[in-house]
Picture 1: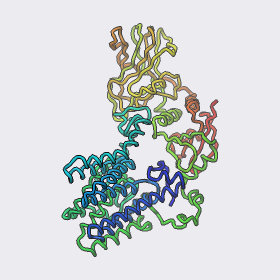
Picture 2 (picture 1 turned 60 degrees about the horizontal axis):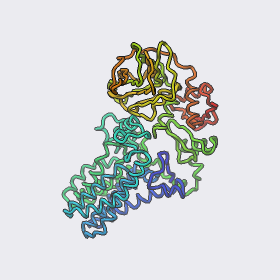
Picture 3 (picture 1 turned 30 degrees about the vertical axis):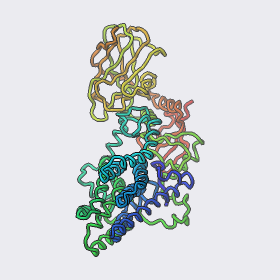
Picture 4 (picture 1 turned 120 degrees about the vertical axis):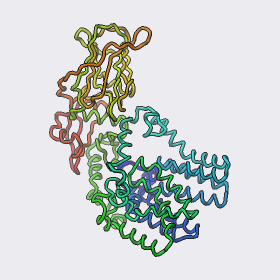
Length: 583
């Protein structure tokens, strides 16, 4: 069992990873899966139908995506175990009405949220179940308080360190300098479809094909609607309700593994719905046969995420971990290449990421934070013509004596079309006003990066980092009166539906329009923009760049690293490492 921790160590396995590294983290997650199957069997015995528990556990355990997910250090199977534990404890409490059981119920319900955001619904289910059964508020509040004990530390950490209690989501509500709204929008848009254009095909994607949505639960789960026949039993109704509640957030992330938390409930309901044991046995045999690693390629997509074989020799270390990973996991080789060639403590910018759990270095991935977004944008400005400041939007007007001026955006962009500015300049009689430390700069939205529009670096730019809407602005307070008769916004060609006007603040504090829509000029690109980019990266503490050979811009760097002030220091495993040599 080798943990693929390229996403980062999950909360469930972090202590194990700290002690025993990758395999220990995977074993912890696998232990959750074993505990889950035992709980399912125990539930079947408790309701007097042990064959239902055994059949449901087998349906769950043998599912191809569960086999893959449960043997690495993801957390979906762990979340499923915790969620089912909440359900089980609620069933025990309903039988005994022992008040002391409300404490573990609440703690486990809060643990669901702490393990995975989308599992927060189990806290709602636990609170609602207790309130409904008792018709009293106090027992439900005990559950809520215990759940809060598990949830609040996580929320508080997000609020303190990311200025957003729901980080990395809801950044438009909780605005902060740590995560970009447009990055969240792009990310959530992808999660809602995974490239599956017709969502009516999702049942086939998650049961049979398995490539687009990252794994498959198995063809037998096409029979999942038979679980509705379990509604004729009290136990069936009790199983399907939390299963459907856990399924409710699924459309926000249609990856197959996000079905795992609700799978135990549907598996048991399917087993309960089949009245004739031989039919249930036939379903189980078919499921086991179809889920065997060597049989899956007969019907699944070629690159479906799954176990392709049982790695017995690797698991017992007859084949050493380092040898197996070096031969079968390119990301491991890249991680080793980083550690072998990058000085200890140096950070590495990786446009498309790396298997950072296998390296001792901090790897900065472009889309994972606002700061990383900025670094990637600077790097991409060196080669991507659509990001380079070759467009000047020029305002001309009768000379004005002004103290404070703003460029106001009045248009509405198409989704993900931003308001952007590489430089803002002001002129009088053909001469640019020299930048002055007395100037006070403001912007809305994204006030944190406004200086990038006034730094004379063509590789940096201010971006709204959200779809353009009326009222966005760049505001310059000169700290005293200045004469100006022109202003320019230097920007890129990668947006069109942006409309601007120039305003000044009068003596009464009101904004007055002094120039309407600017006219556009094409300006020559600074031939040293790559060096500007590398110098800026260096000044921000980034001296090492990891580029996969398939990354956008990789070819440009590979063909002429000198124009970037880069030095190639390592290559292999489909990737190259460059050192920034800019003084």
